Amino acid sequence: MLVYHGGSAPIIEIDLQKCRPYTDFGRGFYVTKFKVHAENWAKRFKKQNKDGFVTAFNYIESQFTDYISKKKKFDGYTNEWLDFIVNNRNEEAVEQTHGYDIVEGPVANDKIQNRLHNYLRGEITKEAFLKELEYHEETHQICFCTLASFQALKRIENDLTVFVEKISEDILNNLVNEKGIDANTASDLFYSSKIFLAIADSSGNSYKQNWQDVYKILRDELG
Image (cartoon, rainbow, N blue to C red; front, top):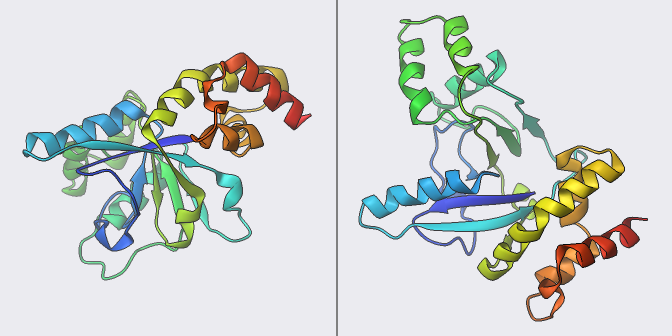
């Protein structure tokens, strides 16, 4: 899966100690599959007279399996998601309130936070708050909470990112339709394939191929 991090500087090496505590999923390094959301976050730093950058990563789940990790995924704005958010935002907690390596789910963004404060003050019920979120735009974030979890992230150079964005949608759509798999499985197959590793080697010429040629090689590789 191609994911993005918006910040004040390009990320060369992830430093867990620089990650803020008391956020949605606790202290960790956050990315999103929506590039525009990462770009909007980077723009916040520009408004503070700082540079804003978006760094792209390849998130390969197969390199960090359930056998060596604890992963949690929220599929929507659920009761469990809300309780999890509230626990992690509790500034009275001395340590991380959960033991997961990787947490994925929706974002409690600015639009949500105002209503979240209303809920925490008892001004609206949990049911009413979650009902409102049924109509909220789709958001997404993945939090890498431990040093070990960083092994699932591979930084992508900017010129390669442009190429991957250009061809990945067609390749992934064809994988989904041809093999009858979901989008996440298709992403994992492509981004962990030998042809993708060849493309990622910017010293070669593999990245100059069109998506049809790349897809043919991928099909042959997958069998």
